Amino acid sequence: MESLDKIKRNAEYLLKTLPSHVTLLAAAKTRTVEEVQAAFAGGIRYFGHNYVQEAQAMITAANFKATWHMIGHLQRNKAGSAVELFDMIESLDSIRLANELEKRCAELGKTIEVLIEVNSGAEDNKTGVIPQEVGPLAEAVSDLPHLQLAGLMTMGPLSGEAELARPYFRKTRELFEQLRKANLPNGDVRVLSMGMSGSYRVAVEEGATMVRIGTLLFGQRG
Image (cartoon, rainbow, N blue to C red):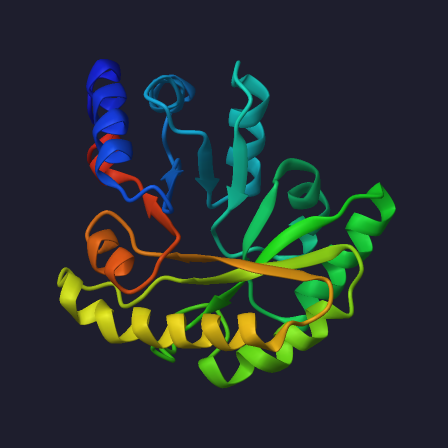
């Protein structure tokens, strides 16, 4: 765990070194409100959470206005809370979840942006849709008036080798470009969220417009 001053400096450095078209999303899972506030003080304005309950406590306690993304697997029974809390859901992985999000958004009179999570390596232990299912899910989402498809998210393989993730990032970029060309109604496909602390440089080289960074910003979890 880094000191609060070091987190602020890390944030400033990362923002300075990323290309201007790439958004840094701070992965705030298990982090304290103080740590997140230090990242905010360093210039970061986008934060991601894996769990609805943990995010709720942090967003309530935070004394700043940021943009909050759901980046973890979202269960349908948490969809109502998620659409109240978050500005974007990055982990849409089924039409059933899409329908539940649509229902909850309609109740609130709210439209929410979503990213389809792509299991780019078709790994059994991963959430997300396999590449072949991206198109059909995107078409289904385009029929839901309270969901706006903003792009794709992928994790890539959880190995220590950044280069091993490159073909998965490249495949997701190809799917992203196909979606953009499809011009589906009710969408604004512009976000390609991929790459974490160990792989974000490769992800940027392969076309990421958003990277999700935790360890490089906050240090190792305690």
